[in-house]
Image 1 (spheres, rainbow, N blue to C red):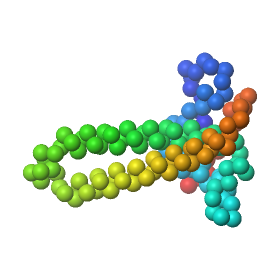
Image 2 (image 1 turned 60 degrees about the vertical axis):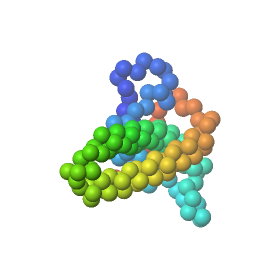
Image 3 (image 1 turned 30 degrees about the vertical axis):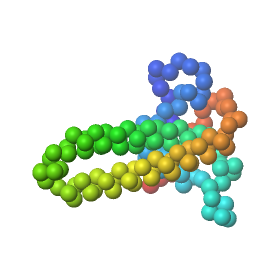
Length: 137
């Protein structure tokens, strides 16, 4: 999904792109990508507008995930006494650990995909913003 910022005065079409649900949008944009025979994403065959949307959403997703992991780390550090006295269960602590691990993996894969998208559209400068609609879940 592409939405224009009402407060954006810049004439730059790329700068005016914004998404309201970056994780959801990213997941629903990925099915538009085609694969090669080796099961690799074929970035060169993809619509450049789609690659731009994926890269922009990927950047926001990475920031969101990293800030969330940081916040969870701060909460865990401040909850150490409660964890030690078992006021917070070991199961909850373990589940948070698994969540942090998965979020870290998500951020790494999203970074790889966003960087590959940006490399593929390095010379793409649209005069108007083209929005590729999300796949339906």
